[in-house]
Image 1 (cartoon, rainbow, N blue to C red):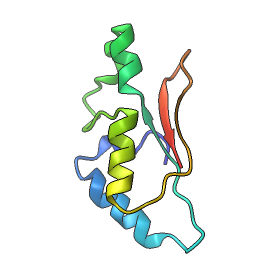
Image 2: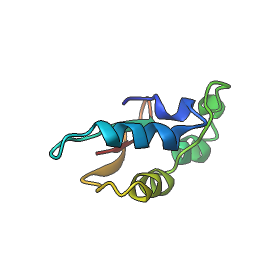
Image 3: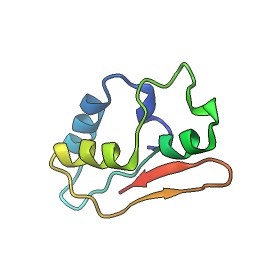
Image 4: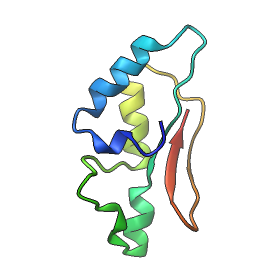
Amino acid sequence: MRHYLEHFATYKSLIKSLKNLLTPKGFIYIEVPDTNIFLQRKVPLYLWEQHRIFFTLCSLANTIENEALDIIYAASLGRSIEPSLCIL
């Protein structure tokens, strides 16, 4: 799910739905804009009206862990063009 989750006020319900679709060895990959990088650079581009939620790596990880999902990988990537938080 690439740059999708941040568009939903009901993002927690969306994650629950994905969790219910997982097979025992399944994975969910989520990528969202990295709010911290945009704030550090003082670039307001991430404040698009379509975005309903703004994530930091900590808030994204907490959201995933609150759904009893294990985090295999979490990082902030793509600092030059499109700063993103990636979590598996």
